Image 1 (cartoon, rainbow, N blue to C red):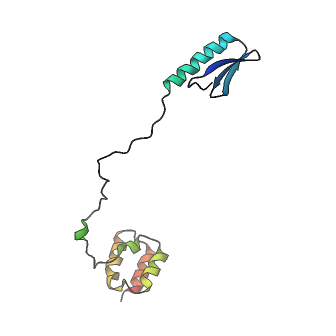
Image 2: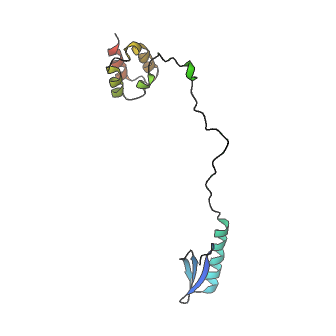
Length: 128
């Protein structure tokens, strides 16, 4: 019963179609069981095992893409990532005064981007 294909087994006068030790179907008449067995075997022969895809060798990993080259980014400019979060995170980010020299630029970016009234009020309150 360790065959890869289903087999027909007579158990107490009933014809069982068995695969890997488990009954798939059973029939009282051998003719019907034979017909059903042919159908199951055809399905099992058509089904091919799924193979995991092989990792591609020799190809380098995809490089991350950026809008600007890394050397073109002005390191002394504002940290625009503080505008991508929530307004409460923006309040905490500018509370220490680390971004005060770039408040005007941050305000312009906020107005051109998300244009959140509460974020604009927070940034305007830090203007000075």
